[in-house]
Length: 136
Image (cartoon, rainbow, N blue to C red; front, side, top):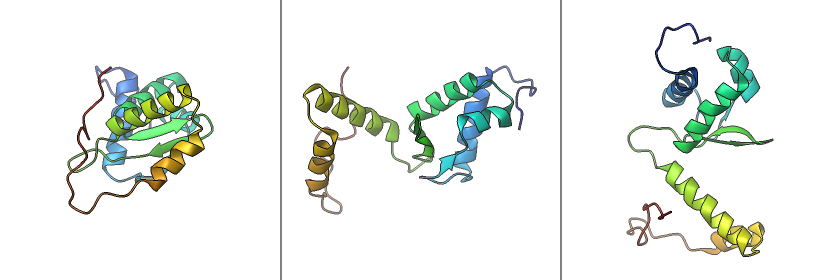
């Protein structure tokens, strides 16, 4: 699966990012499914592991995958029309967790609070400010 010799003008990490994104868009990996490890992808693409990790970080920023040490690489969204902007939601969740951590709120308490929240009625308008990115 080497792409290093394709003659593309794009940096290798961008080529890898595009190839993985294309695989996700084609449905080779479903939402919730694990991708091969970064080491396995490095071997498949015949690229340095840091190059693959750079591509994966870009895909995480786009909201397509999520990963962390010991958790593996999970497809969290398929890109394209009709798919939610999971990247924005992930950013908001990270900020929420950071605020909770700063105030000493246990993550289990945060999860319990979220689970107790009522679900919006079918067809109801989203809460004010939903979908907007917070100001930095």
